[in-house]
Image (cartoon, rainbow, N blue to C red; front, side, top):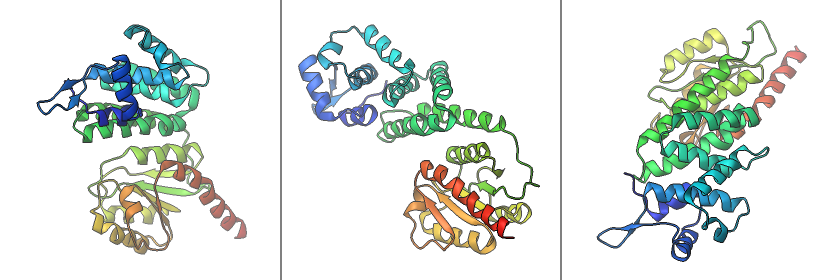
Length: 306
């Protein structure tokens, strides 16, 4: 059974540790155990209780009222907030986190499907999917969660992005004024979720996309670019290449595919120094989404001039 420190609870619930201590002392909200060195640790029931309480308090209910409710009443009330016409992200996120902690795949599907129906695929991923993965990642790195919860959510989001992209029409290559985007992950990189988001966002806006997926050697990227003639090469650096090789790989892409701009997404790209001209690092997917129409405008202007 997972055990959490108060720092874990703070990261997962977004409730300050000071507030958690007050709620614990004043209302007996949580039931921590103590280690041999007298350090508090909290169980899964404590985390779920805190998530429900945080959800209700974030929507204006007073803590003194919430703690008088039974466990079932709090759970029911917190879940009900997820189905309002214009829900805040917090209640949905807490409901998703609870389902992920329980490895409750049907509940995760239900919550995500409802959110997609209301917010659309892109906003659901940006406002709920990625924040949920960030919270799970914090717990996993701290050792309070196994990797199973993160894998479950990642695979669910991956399936959703693939299905949503497949439902969109393909843009014929004969459409000369549509920008061409070649998407790939470099050799050794397998974290595909951000690239799948790019694929969906581009296709939804009528762009031509060649999606080549993870772990692609540079020689194969160059060969594909020669045949496809992309306007933009876009990739994601999460764990590969090695930190010291980012600048070298970016320079190789620019030298061997000089007609294409290069977008580098991810922490390794943002932290890299000395990227060559024509390479644009991006820190978040909101930036990527905002960039798409400007790339198309530049190409359309070029075609008009000809």
